[in-house]
Each structure stands twice: as C-alpha cells, then as structure tokens.
Length: 245
Image 1: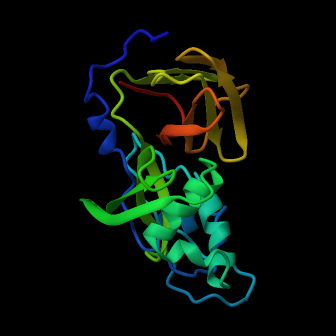
Image 2: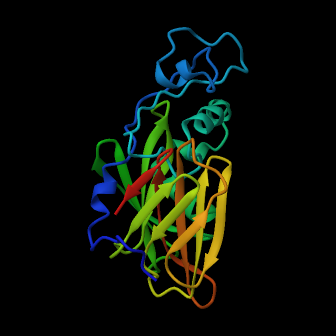
C-alpha cells in the first residue's frame, strides 16, 4: 500500500538537507533542561562533577536531531555525562558507531563495515553489510555531542521509490515501499514516547497518543521470510507538524 502524496525516486533528496548542523557542545553549569543550555554556549566551567554538559545544536527548523542513540538534544546532553566518563567508547569513531547501530538496531551480530565517506555539511556515511558480501545499508552519521561523539542521523538500503511523511497533532502517516519484505517493523519515537508496529503491507497511519513537542525519528526494518533484517530505512523527525515527500 502506498500513501497518497508519495514522491518519485529521488524525492528523498530534499530530506538529506534536513540533517542537523554539527556544532560543538561544551561543559556548562546549566542543565540540559534549561533553555539557555540548549541555545547558547556556556562561558562558565562546571562547578560539580555531576553537572551535565550543555549541548549546543541548531538543527534546521524542518529537521530533527538524530535517530540513535538519542533523538533529542536533551537526551544527548544527558548521555554526554557518561561519555565524558568513558561510557560507550565506540562513539568516538564513525565506523564503530555504525557497526554498533547495525548490531543493536538491525540485529546483525557480525556486520562488515566499509570506509567513511564525507558527504559534506558535517555528515559522513559508512556502508555496513549484514555479513561480508551480504545485504547492506548506508548509515549516515554526524558528531552531535561536543564535536567528539557520533550519532546516527539517517539509514537507507536501496533508494526509496516512494516516500512521504506527515505529522499533524497526534496523527502520523508514513508512505514507503515494501522492498519485497515479508514483514516490516516500524518504530516511531520522540524521545521516550512513541510506537512500534509490525506490518505486512507498506504504509503506516497511526495515532501516537500525543502531539510531538520534541524532535524524534522513524526507523523501518525490512525482514525476509526467515525473519532476518535485510534492509532498513530511517530518518529524523522535527518537533510538531511536519510534511515531506
């Protein structure tokens, strides 16, 4: 099933420009819940080892923040506390971050990774295969925390022929191809809220149960007849109303 308003092949190109601009975050005295901590760079050093670093990010107003591990600047700022202490050391490298995403989200236990490609505007891509010579996806990443730690901002297998997304209030509609999958797992999250559904036909119309006030993301996993993920498609979502095709 295709949703009305789906775009022809290549229509997703415009959404590529919706990636966040990568701007360094520094340790600050403000907590991430403070508007000042999210919009300005703190000039004061942290006075407590428990103080959370502020994350300075200015995403395009039509874009979200990231897909994974965090999809909001606030969550990323909280995660930075652990990262500063040495948690998740794989996040200091684009290739290892892409591989970890493949393991945790795509359920690929031994992914094969390629070299990093500079896509411009602070965005980089890594080709990751389920196994050497197996199905693969392109994972796009950016340094969104302190210009040091990587986040996944986009993932795609084969280029989608038809894609559309609309968010109005609590209603969300996603139009996408089935890629020949036996089933598709669709995840839509805004911070710690959202939904997950398993579909056997392409396209999603659903009520989130809330009107998004934060940035978010969607991620579609395509499974074959054996239940294995062979492709994926995902991107960021902005806060509030949104439409793209």
